[in-house]
Length: 75
View 1 (cartoon, rainbow, N blue to C red):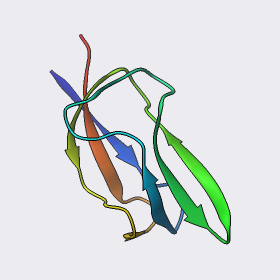
View 2 (tube, helix red, strand yellow):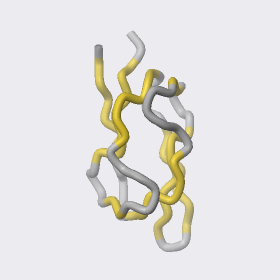
View 3 (cartoon, rainbow, N blue to C red):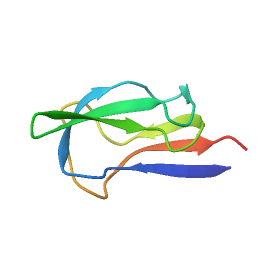
């Protein structure tokens, strides 16, 4: 089992969660949307798998390098 951390690339606010814990995602799926300087920034799944942990909620302020969620990658 490989766990992949989905990292934040900039200081922003979590505007919308598109997926939740337990859901299966494919590489490139939008898993959440961040807002920074009135721009919406989609966050894509870096790998196919199942979301095992959500570490940010809607409305949370996040910074570059923060782990947003964890995905258990498909073997």
